[in-house]
Length: 254
Image (cartoon, rainbow, N blue to C red; front, side):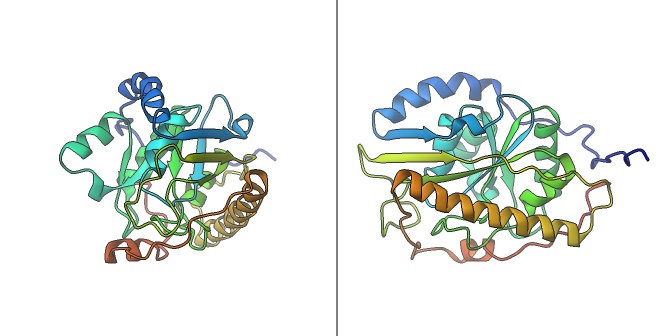
């Protein structure tokens, strides 16, 4: 019996995020940032060298996104809250290929842009917790599960240590010369499901990925001997909302 063909949401006409400036900027960005912090990658052999990949990372500090984007072996197009895409910061984020996201509800535009990146063999970065916090993967949104089910792209878990000092607030930076560790884990592969994908399928996959992310955090702690900085005490109301579960209803085929 032949396998049912996999149908993807329509991404015709969806423009991929910028990448030429991103690729040019990364080497010089590494040199600049290494003058301030001691950044180390572990387990990069787990990241496929080519093809679509979803990188799912914990989120503890302001510098998580920039450091992951610059030091990851492959360019990462990360979902970033749309509030950041204002003024000069927004122009910079677009220039380096980051993807604006409405965190309060399902965002079809952001999802289709991610699908475009993956269809082109690129890397999508997701912070499944939804916002900066303790980084313990207590809350995991279903978006990463949905993308994995739609595309079959492997999900590579990442844990970072040192991007926020213990007790630091929402925008606290790592201390100068501080050590920052990014730990990559073995890819989690999910069998892609044809449309229509059900809420139950997305929920079951989200539970599987949540378990794998928590297990990788334990392994990363053991490998580095490090721990996370604890909760953030000055979260804004918008960031508290962002930790709530988002509906997984599929409505992206039109």
